[in-house]
Image (cartoon, rainbow, N blue to C red; front, side, top):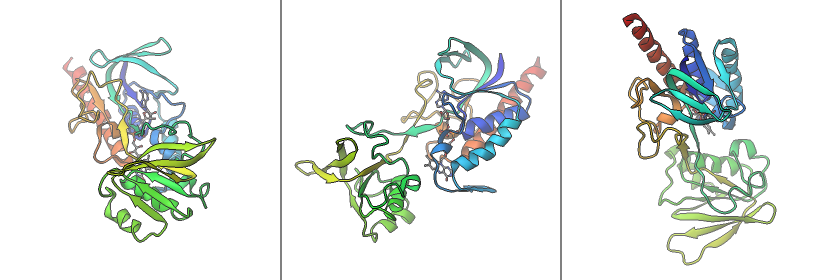
Length: 308
Ligand SMILES: Cc1cc2nc3c(=O)[nH]c(=O)nc-3n(C[C@H](O)[C@H](O)[C@H](O)COP(=O)(O)OP(=O)(O)OC[C@H]3O[C@@H](n4cnc5c(N)ncnc54)[C@H](O)[C@@H]3O)c2cc1C
């Protein structure tokens, strides 16, 4: 019986575990990936907005986190797949056949990039699908590329790619870009970027690598093809809550609903980080809510034991 089982070892889960250890709680962290860090592995841009720390990218920040994690005294199981979970009973069955039991749980499973679900999207992974403008800028230098999406991430990536690609076609299904003004204002004067609003990419095509996209414009009769050698998709994220959705209150997009103490609708089950933060996901927010959940649990367990 553990005091706390934390699910997910991104910034939220790690911060929660660090605090649980500091507060003397018997803690187990379960991470499905082979490595800890969550989205930090996809952050190729400099991290300049985590108070007191500036790093070249997410990997460098993770190195700093790892020093504290290595020095702390909690159990961390990576590559661990949860088969089923009973939140009320605080019981977890692992794919390995093992059953785990805890007094409390912290869900810190974060978010994943939303997929378009169009032909070619998966087939061309690593063959012209661009993961990050910051990382892949040089790889796609001199090539025409397409960016799908209209929010901050899409527009920021289009601007980055336009530094080294002759043309960047930004395809957005809405009428106006949703990106913050600071980014959107830089798009129009950039002669390398063409924006198709009220348009969708319906197919990514090619022989062995990406060679074109098929674009359908609203009101257009027939889709047309645009020759490109790279495609980057940034159409938002979705919360990793499939395991829990039937048991805990979630909003209309599947994010876990919590109160100011990170408490979910199930007693002694907490959520921290992006999985319960649709509006303002940040590393600081993840670290902060992880700490909050840990402190609230410690306070409740102490109260319980002192109450007898
Ligand atoms: C390209 C990019 C750039 C960014 N730049 C910044 C920035 O400059 N500043 C900033 O503040 N934020 C930035 N962010 C956002 C920041 O990375 C996230 O807010 C932060 O990582 C959220 O941490 P988290 O722990 O809540 O979730 P995540 O980082 O998503 O971690 C969740 C973890 O849970 C694991 N998991 C999921 N499901 C299960 C399961 N069923 N069982 C076990 N484990 C599971 C995942 O494998 C993952 O390791 C950026 C994000 C991206 C993608």
